[in-house]
Image 1: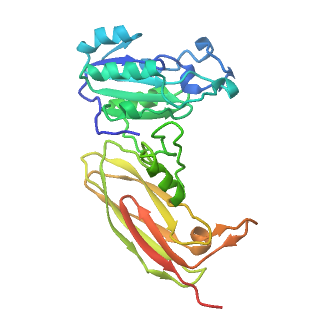
Image 2: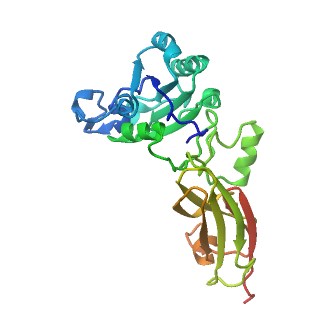
Image 3: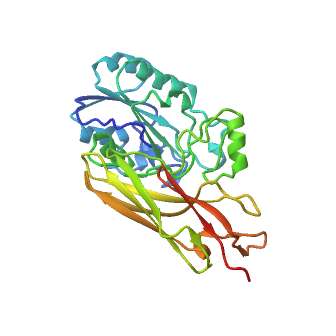
Length: 329
């Protein structure tokens, strides 16, 4: 996830700090090469950490190994990378009671932000950790869920701007502790979330940004009524790259069965497509809706149930609706 269009193309002096900045094991995870290893020497010698990968992308990169060293070096930096997250773990040894990012890491991030320099937070972990307190004051945030042996280089190339990221969140990133609302939540779960005055998520499933900007328009349906289980409706939407850089956009199509015999998900992902769109150009995306593929749900016996009624289609910020109305037997 990226929360701004900040990148380090003009950065000359980069400061890197954090517990996952210069370790290989955190990129690969606990079940790699050996069980729950903390021995850095068993990893390939040419495997970069995030810090060493950034050294390949920028001319002047320094590492701070403590909070005090961060405060000392921050004044000379043009931007600060804080590599937070978790050490490698496996099985019950990784069990925790609280998803909050440890307070010493929160303190480190706040100190970096207090320097007045742009802060890029990189979360390297096997699960999300709650970062709501410091999220909005970061220039950019990237979640790297155990990215593997080449993960350090991949992250560094995104930060430098060499690679234009296009990923979307594959889950709801939690807003708070004990507040885990699934991406395909039901209406009742949404109401409960609002009752405790928290959003559904800090970053929702399907969200994500890049160095390009995309605009959705002209959502159209080939028909507003489906009269046969074997029929179909074609949905089309236009996506324009309004930036000056070519980029890939993943277009996600969600359906919501408005009234059913059992409660249905508010946002049920049914189809997606991804294309590279040149700067200033547009592309049309199409989703063919077929009842026997996209509108049914299982009963308690696992049998397909297809019920008449209205469905809401969502793509990007746009919505429309159609009706399934089959002929009476």
